[in-house]
Length: 459
Image 1 (spheres, rainbow, N blue to C red):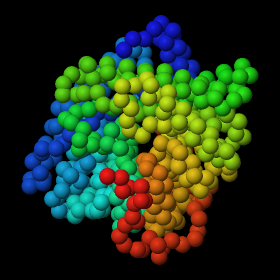
Image 2: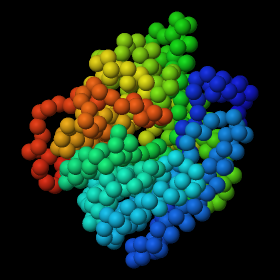
Image 3: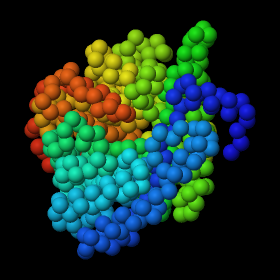
Image 4: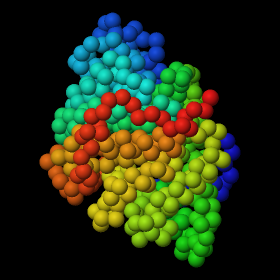
């Protein structure tokens, strides 16, 4: 990859003043081929040794590349084969928890903040092992601090597994009770059309078709896009939507170029069996001032995120990011577009606090963004059925539109609408959003699946 001097100078400027960084390099490690569940100690030993063997140098090498290029790499993480496949046959929650504690221990020993893939794929149905893994989540989240879980509940080809949706509503409440202040629920996400090469936490897992060891990169860059749009507006040239989209595309191209460069350099230094996977183009905000998706939407002319016009502005942003980034990268993967996690974006927090961003408006925005209802807090008295209803609505948006959608929801026990807690760091401030009080108990109590749309018949 060739970079000219002007690109290098501009990248240095973006790092120094516009929060440009590589949000994560995530190594996917296959755990296929282990001893199975016959001997729990043997299984845990295999899991630990396989991950340690592949990933023990990840942090050191990433730091070397960071120093060499001057490009901050904020997070170094690992994802693994969905553990429901690895653990199928274990019989008790205690055994599942023991495996999760092993994941937590190896994550600590190799120096990473999170390890993802304590996951199950149940869009077609739940095996006994899938259900056991899901039911183990309260004890697992209480016993670990680095383990992340994702459960794929639906897809555009299979429909929505409503039995699993109902169960997850119950389990999410149990996790909120087991781990105080939302810390457990922040590591748990449910999906429609979950991608197998997503580098971002908490939804990452190593797809079963992913080979032995793959490195995927997640870029950042809301501050870079915001800075470019501010310069455009200050110059008096923000007069046409094409001016806005072209500016975003150019910035997305540059951000993605930086991400792919970092990924290839890390892979080269790690050596076989690690191979380069994909760059996830998603703009990933932080609570830092000037690093907000909401601020980007507002510089386009919205008084506050959530007001009428917000969904259209977000759709334009996501489309421009994808178009610009795709041209810059040999392989785009993951989610790719723009994250709108409420607590992790200072502008989103501001919009919730001033009342322009409601849960219903946020749901509408998820029809065009990369993910869905991400890091959304709800009052502590929200019922399991209401949580399942919120999940089902979001999955339906993704299923019908053939896109990935997800829900990472945090019930704040003991708190009501408008009250908040601050998790600190990248997780930010959680404000409990008002939930519709109409009952959905009878609807959620139905068993079976919501069928996929007619567009699923494509063969």
